[in-house]
Length: 78
Image (tube, rainbow, N blue to C red):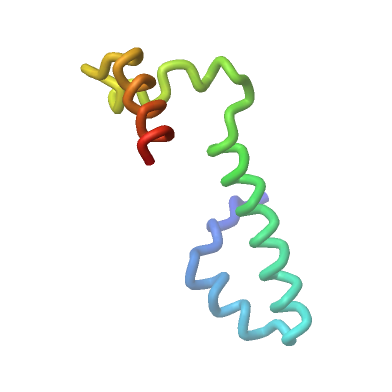
């Protein structure tokens, strides 16, 4: 048995033209669904513990108590 050459990106693009509109629309749905799953897996933490330290660089050098006091003052003083 002979190893097959991998299909190139351009082969896929050319193959789209051979599909009827319904098949093309189905293909778009399949690709969209797979992309959504891939993106969700990469962006959604699987555990709350993965969020630890997230954004820490934004708070570096800021005193938490001073920040909260100023925020509360802004609610009163608008």
